[in-house]
Length: 402
Picture 1 (cartoon, rainbow, N blue to C red):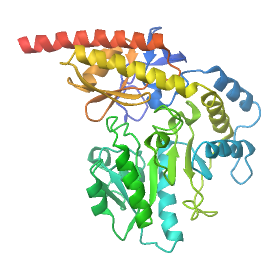
Picture 2 (picture 1 turned 90 degrees about the horizontal axis):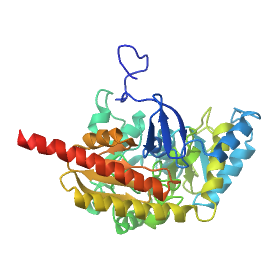
Picture 3 (picture 1 turned 30 degrees about the vertical axis):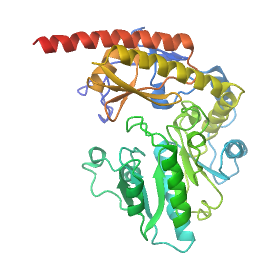
Picture 4 (picture 1 turned 90 degrees about the vertical axis):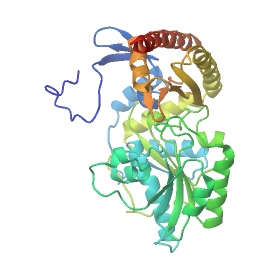
């Protein structure tokens, strides 16, 4: 319930009149007792669904031992998590924070500080891409470059040159004496589940190597299994110098991370960055528990199998309802359906059928199923989509009839 006349929450969210009191696996139970199939996953956060028993056990155990410790002291469990993330990635060093936007601020600082430490303080600009979304802080809003998010907050932070997504010639033209690096999402989530060919990412890697730039990946949404591998850069076939993680890293407990190669992080000396809550013991326990589950043999085989099944079945519905849907896109379980009708209408119609989804740019609706989703739950979601399409088709026919 978000009646602005009675709510004391800052009205920055366009909340629907629906609240939940508990969740289990892929399902949520509303305050009125109705059950919903959750294909939002808290916007790609609840990768292991709701109330996963291993996460509950880890948090319950940690909550009886230690809740918070200053980063003035060692963090044995944080060291363990960092080592596991490095073992699974290109990275040598990890910084823990509390959110995706914070992780992206850290990525931007790593890139700028690298150039500073190499004697190039004038190189502070990052090339970013149209349709991107990097966060809601002033720095990440500037990197995002979207007018609708920047409006009313004064001049955007300087240091970002935005070019069309996938346009290699535009990237080459944008590189100048002040360029420090290139920042890109392996798959644009908020931007409409859009990707670029592998050849584009390989060309970016080559340009960075030629010009002494750092290649930064925003894996806040794509990382931690969402695209069918632990990190999306592995599917792209290009290794970045630095990347951000958040969302699914804690399985629903707030935590973000900056992962960097040792050379890329060489400018980050004591005092150059910090966080009071970053690496909180509860968040670290949750993230270690998430990795326990994801690194078990067969986990990503299941994600890829469910991805193929979901996309095949969605494509079948697209074929049957061309007046409502036009395209299926995405990797792993970061799947989008481009709508013909307004995407908000489709989200509402799906919610009427007890399926929760989330909109994105380019008139796309994201189907962000928990990575533990079953074949039966995918079948159920498709039946819900079919019923929503029937309802929307009927509405469109009535409009046409006047």
